Structure formats: C-alpha cells, structure tokens
Length: 123
Image (cartoon, rainbow, N blue to C red; front, side, top):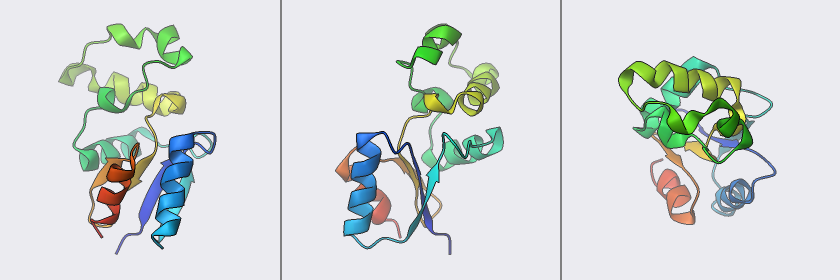
C-alpha cells in the first residue's frame, strides 16, 4: 500500500495547515519539499492523471515567473500540454500547493480543510 505524500512549500500557510491537519488526524504520510526535490515531467504527468486535471489547472499564474514566461497567453489544449508540464518542472514555484496523493491512487490539491479531509477519507 502506498503512503500519502504531500508536496509542500514550507513558507506556504495552506501547506502548513494541511500538514497540521494530517498530524492531528494521525495520518501516515511523507513530505516532499517540491521546490528542493523538484518533480520530473513524468512525475508531474502522473500527479495530473491522479488529480484528473490538466497542467494549467495546477499552475500558479500569479507568480512572477509566470508573467515572465507569458503563461497567461499560452493555449490550453492537448498540443500545448507538454509545454505546460515542462514549465512546471523547470519552475516548480508555478505548481499549485499543497498536492496530496492519497492511498487509493487519487490526489487532491489541499488548499482547504475539506480537500485535505477528502484525501484522508480515501485511505
């Protein structure tokens, strides 16, 4: 059985809240500081599949690097998918956080207590 993994940026308050909630619930999980331990393009694709989302759905378009890259103007279509995934891997700050991969193979973006509880409920 897989254990839950949570991708966090320790400076992010929503990440800290999610970790606090996992701890309070006694969940077993591993922490991935994705800004230091940067996900590969394949890992990003795998997480997107588990989330049921497209790369633009988990892209933080408000980040300075997003503006530099002009991401807001990129097409959101199948042909552009690899370009988005490559940007997320090259610039992990663009990845929405925290992402929690649940035991059952699914994943959630844990930006609310409900989302974190959803991941916990999928054990």
